[in-house]
Amino acid sequence: THQTKRSNSPALIVTNHQAQKFPLLYPPKKDGSGGRSSKPYRFDRILADVPCSGDGTLRKSPDLWKKWSPASGIDLHGLQLEIATHAARLLKVGGRLVYSTCSLNPMEDESVVAALLKRSKGSLQLVDVSGELEGLKRRPGMYTWKVGDVFGWHDAPGSGGRRQRNVADTMWPPDGAK
Image 1: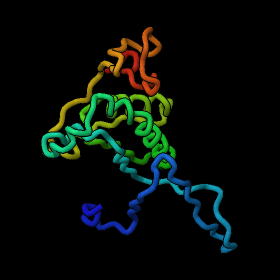
Image 2: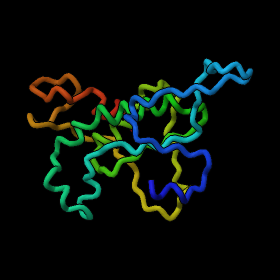
Image 3: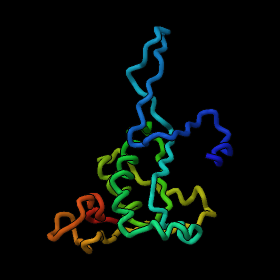
Image 4: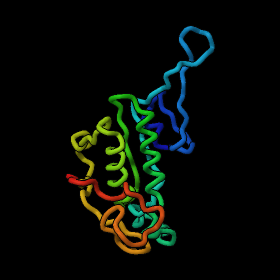
């Protein structure tokens, strides 16, 4: 939150709340009756900086090696998707949702974004903003990846063999991705 003062905005909300359960906020009625409007506030922009494994910071935070495991991404995927889905519900039509992690794991990044886009049934779109921050180094996201857990690698959702109970169908790349 120490970086937010640079935005110099009187309309900034920073919260320490379970993001997937952030409540709908209803403005007061304009008639002065003291009641609440039936339509909740919607936000112009939401930054969903979700909890993550932090594997993208292992170089600068070597203490993370003690806690990190390949299963971290699988363990967090469901929570990350819940947060992103709820953030999309809180967004105004035409608003901007920025999904952020400090992970390099496609279970925490591409698979969450792909599942969110699929759930939205066309009401959300992935936008290329590379022209807005030209000095920022970036690479395109992945279109294919493997899903693995303690029992091994799995080819597709529902494929045979044992797998951890928290391995979800939303973790695989969408069909025909690219």
